[in-house]
Every structure is written in structure tokens, then in C-alpha cells.
Length: 111
Length: 115
Image 1: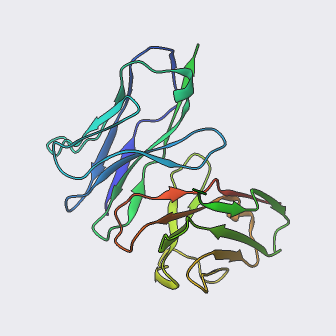
Image 2 (image 1 turned 90 degrees about the horizontal axis):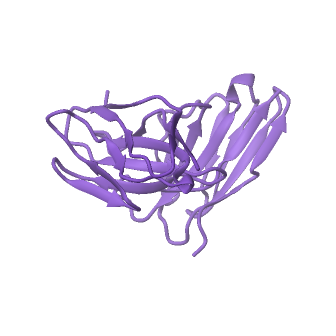
């Protein structure tokens, strides 16, 4: 079935460093792709999405590009802040329209 | 605008006891979801409602889990009896409309510990 694989955490980096979280997917059709974020003590919230190949989703300085040729949707941010510390989930909508999540990647940003 | 509200936030029970979780979705959201999130894993869908109809409950363990959304607004998820392996976070989410766009709004979750 359709699935998402993302890099394991925790990812620890200093403030203003460049962040990349790798995400690859397996799908039979043409899924939409998402990044959700869970800040400490809060519910998951949608960070960005892309609905077709070569689309770039962006929000709060984060970007991810839907790469059909490499079946990837890597999340990037050029300069992280302490407030970006959270758990990031890559997800897709499968052929049934159901949202499938990856295992999550914890990011810790230190001052 | 109020978000998705869940209660209780935390619940500790002994195995074989019943437990119930309540969710109030964002006003006007027709679709409501219950997800299970085990430690270190992503959320997994238990059941999805469109208004008061359960349209996908294929992953709900029906021998001990039940859910209802009687008036198409708030919802309750029940476990009876609870087992040790049910310790997890139970997430409720809602979305506008009935077409699954993947854009969900989540509550803060109800963390269950079964002793």
C-alpha cells in the first residue's frame, strides 16, 4: 500500500543552521503530499502541501518540492529558530483519499 | 475561532476498565476523524465520519472500540475493556466539506495510560 518514509530523529542543530528533513513516498497513483508539525503541547497542524509533481509548498520559511522522479518531498528551511523545535510529519493522501503519516522526525534547535 | 477540543487531556486507568474520549470539532466542519498515535509513530486512522455517518471504520478494533457522532457534531470514542496495549494518544481531527483533501485540523489529543 501507499506509505511514507522519513528520516529518523532527533535532529539537533544550532539556531540559524540549515534544516533538511528527508521524506520519500511509495504510491500507486498521484498522491497529494503534506508536512504537518507538532509543537510541544499542541496538536498537529498543517505546515505546507503540494498536490502535483513539481509543485512547491511553502510556509513560515519552510519549503518542500514534490519530486515525482525521486518520489520525494524533502522539507527545508534556510535558517532555523529555537521556536522551530517540534516534531515534523510527512504525509500523503493514498488512493482512497486517506491521509497516511510517516513516523515523524523530532527537531531540536539550540540557541 | 475555537479549534478542535478534546477531553480529557490525560487519563490513567487500570486494564479491563472502560474509558471514553470526547471531541468537539471546529464549527461547521462536516468530517471528523479519530486517530491513534503510538509513541514515536505517526497517527493512524481509526474512524472517519461524514456528518453522522461512519464512512471508514476499517481500522477500528470493533471488539473493544466503539465511536458515535449522533448529531453530526461532537463525537465520543470508547474503549471497553481497555488493554495495556491501548496506551497511546487518541487524536481527533476535523475538516471542512466531505471530500478528503488531507487538510485536517487536530485537537491536542487525549493521552491514555493503561496500568
